[in-house]
Image 1: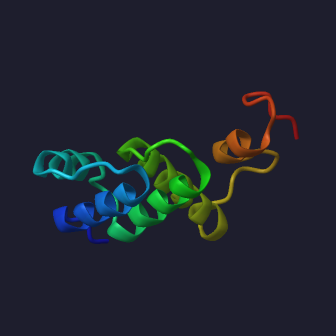
Image 2: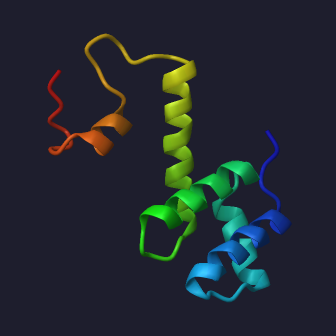
Length: 105
């Protein structure tokens, strides 16, 4: 897994600027690069696009990281370790239950 590079972060900021008009700077790229470390470019791009589809708010690294985290959990759920019998992944509770934290199976 190749971690996201600064030129790739610049691409993300450029994409985000098409919606919200933000101005890229070296400092912004450095900050986003630090905050998005641990993600690949494709994961971050997918997270950015998902946020932009769902939210009227300007995308921030925290939004992207949350989308990446959920995608990783989904992948693990589909292809990796399954939750114990009678349990759900936390992401399912957050996304599907009207009363988060009160999951009854």
